[in-house]
Image (cartoon, rainbow, N blue to C red; front, side, top):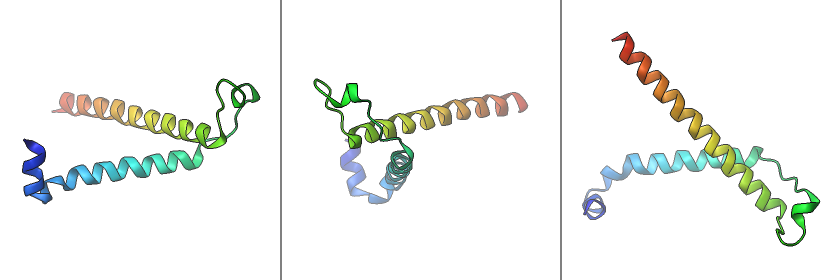
Length: 85
């Protein structure tokens, strides 16, 4: 099993840990800039959205948008380098 082998060689997990930390940092930045405003319609029953909940959802959405744009940029850059070679 790959996970058990990785535990035997902890240095193989460095890239994974770095990736998780970077995504966590990206979420922290996105959460920090997300808006916490909740429309009265969503603050009441049946939704009961709090400011923290709205800020968390906003942070997740911003994180997804940034990761999506990074993926598209990576695809475009890869295709351009293939054409140039």
